[in-house]
Length: 154
Ligand SMILES: [Ca+2]
Ligand SMILES: [Ca+2]
Image (cartoon, rainbow, N blue to C red; front, side, top):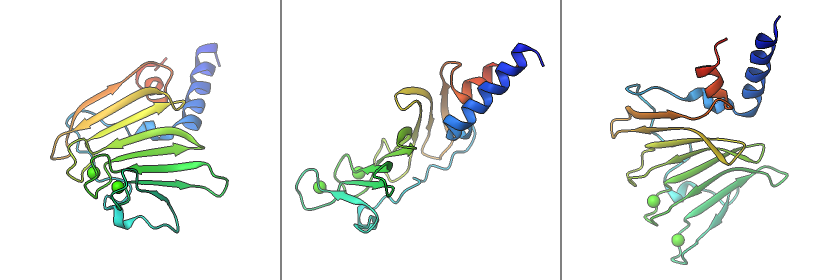
């Protein structure tokens, strides 16, 4: 096995370990499930499983946080426009931000997915139209799992 093949195998293994969600990235024109992975209605968030916060003091929950038994973040949901529906969702892997799903139009459907590398670098994003069809897919760099899969085929 030559150096390039060993490097490719190591990069793929690293990518699989760091951010498996990146392999969910689609392509323009492909239908994307634009339903949020978490409930939209703030009433569906139970204080048994979530830390609930009323950020603006109007008596309605608008932030929810789920942690594991060690206090590591698993996911967060925000109601950014305080209309009773969560519209901004953060998903963590081993406590590191891996993906954000946003309902940018506040209609109860996700239309923007942002994938992160090491919790801070945007490695890719996808945007869907109102029918859930991907209208924009952008993948950045070659240090991400998606970039390796896309660019490094040696
Ligand atoms: Ca509130
Ligand atoms: Ca909302």
